Length: 59
Image (cartoon, rainbow, N blue to C red):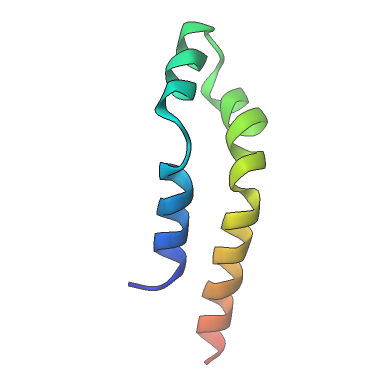
């Protein structure tokens, strides 16, 4: 399995499940939750994984 897949999976598993539950209770739309909460947390990891994927293609 290429390196980017475990990086992305680990980043997603690091997000507390309680945050998803609370967002549903507060009726926050999924897109807003993604944009305001998840994207800032996952941005660095996903960019790093993307960099590894591109570097892997060049070799």
